Length: 123
Image (cartoon, rainbow, N blue to C red):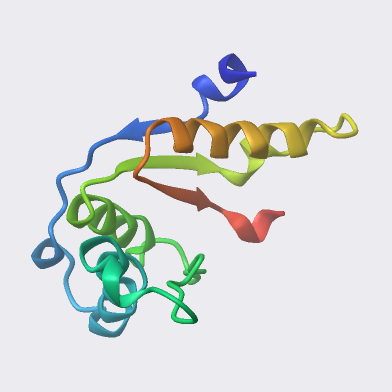
């Protein structure tokens, strides 16, 4: 199964800084609150205060979604996983679920990780 995802997943340690992303101040702040704060200050997220479990970024192509995700991975010193949603879809019953499970298993093995699933709208 790792071989099935091996060619589809782009794994890297990106080098994109917040200053490299022009504009998108609201999105940057939301990502900092959702990802960077829990990583750098875990003591703030105890008890009933839990960090966000995910973020959905949407918009037309070329608006900086993947660049923002790379900036988050750089800032959080995480491994960046980029995969297209079409690589997670299979015509065989149960195969898509196995691929998603395997993706998250790979991410856990490389923790801390950021998973960016591109083209979610095509599902």
